[in-house]
Image (cartoon, rainbow, N blue to C red; front, side, top):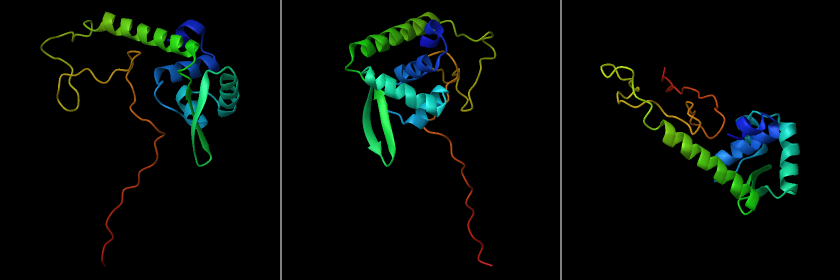
Length: 145
């Protein structure tokens, strides 16, 4: 939502991403990947947002530091409220508009139900992953030859 209003700058993309997930904390690398921003830029933005009391350090795991929006800052609370109000209005406006073109042939999911897929708050198909994907190796049992 913020990128629609304030433009597609790295700062706005980072705040938009964090506002969509206010209950979670992220590392610099995760913020860079999920907000599609270069890591050096995220380092600068994190320092800037921390100095403005908009971002807070939450924990450290090994060498990784985790950050999240500072929900005790009134500006952040207002920003998140505006974001959620906008999302609720979008959802309410489109709740009954997503009907199939033909009642004879409704779209089916892989499971065979009549769901329309998993939609994100923005109405796009949402990928459901919390961390970067890693290669999975197929392990085969060793033969006893």
